[in-house]
Length: 267
Image: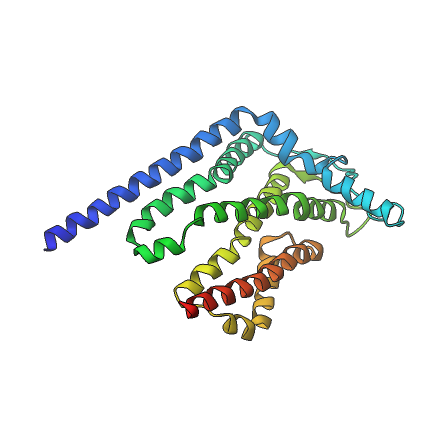
């Protein structure tokens, strides 16, 4: 029996290894493509929030004019330049950014591979419950990344890039600092938007209830503010922009938990 268990355990490890190998291969494949097409990745995507014609800036400016507020909400005119401070700085940023792009693009496939490893361990009833998990997880992650990229990141860049403690001090922004701000905010928001899926599964297995979430709503708001402060640059605007969707997602998750529990009680 012990030998059979050992073989079974090793077989599971072998299966997991191949899932991980295929996942890493997908990440590397897209990373190589991102590395090759660096002009598009950097000029059209990562460095685009620095341009005044970025869609977010145009939207807020048009909104300001439509509401009769003049150019009050018009921003995006950057008076600073990006700089590289080390010999290998641009090359290192290129490699790290390519790997990050590979991870973001291949996220649905990577999650699908991990799900294929977990799924056989579930009962048939549990498998029926989890239909569409890869699709909805990928959609929520993509929405979160887009939210972070088009809203939180540009507002953070404008605030931090133009903030001065004194007129005697000018901002000199490093390339790696700028790129890490955009990528970190976008990826963090992608993970945050997975909250409804997490609540759905925790409710399904009986570890979470809507009453529990309502009871500790105030505590959740405090944790949301702390989490927002951790994953965003140190400015109030970015923290509010991240915390608001988190709070909204929390309320939506309560509704989801309530609906799941109601359906289980009927069954």
